[in-house]
Image (cartoon, rainbow, N blue to C red; front, side, top):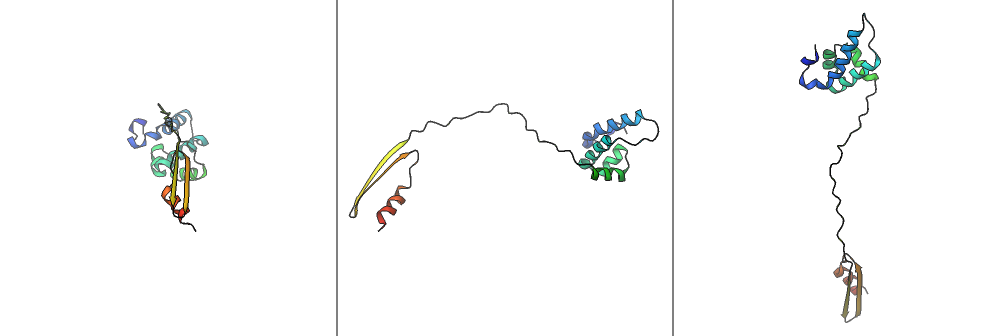
Length: 133
């Protein structure tokens, strides 16, 4: 089987297929396949399945299955595409507000003063202070 006849789905296996064919063409007789080639074939088998890989790469199914179990999978690091443009937005200048509220009732006077960007829950705060005995 040549690399041109590999199914479109298995294009990822072409590199291993070419390496195996080069090794087979450069050696006479029955020599054992080098461990690095077995490891590459095992990686392909993890992705495409043992039966399919063994058939396309012309390897013994049982040995490929054993090699796949014995060889630890290569850890692939996810590479994020480099950022082309990153806009950094600065927060708008917030002027700190200041507020004073004075309450007067039959029980006395209350003054609430705050400085900051957000207002507290004035209704709840004044109710809690005003109604406490």
